[in-house]
Image 1 (cartoon, rainbow, N blue to C red):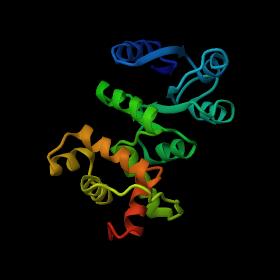
Image 2: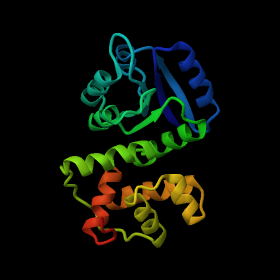
Image 3: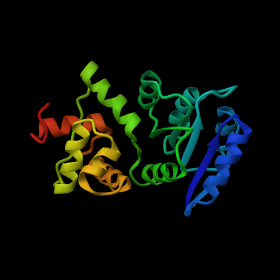
Length: 215
């Protein structure tokens, strides 16, 4: 059972999200909080695995809450739910340690996928986050990750990796390979686990350093 905390100051959104989550197998909302301060207090007596966290909240907002979570509850993973998709905001939250970033307009299927991906592998990266991290890699060239080379990549994983390097969306990669978008997400998360990369930008560096992709 994946234990969730839902933190959002908008009562109707929070209740609607709780209803959606209630229909998901193996998932249980154990906390509903209106701001970060409520969440941090509640976590002292009600441990959770994943927090679905709004950014714009009174008392203690999402960014401040994430910093406090990292200090006091480092095992808790965070999926940010936001109304904003600007690059600077997404990159800032990922740099603060978010394990996933989703728009509030996301479909229930993607929310389900994100929760399970974060629970299984520690992160969920969608096309929006991939784009931001890839552009950040090009702009600042600061990423110097270390990689694992213990598990060889399958041919299908190599195909997905090349698609990521070419900045194709999940849907475009799926169409090219004649598979479902969920299958592409599955292979992408396997790539992250096998290579030790933390995000799509790391996968691109891996591909370039291993001769899989030449920009």
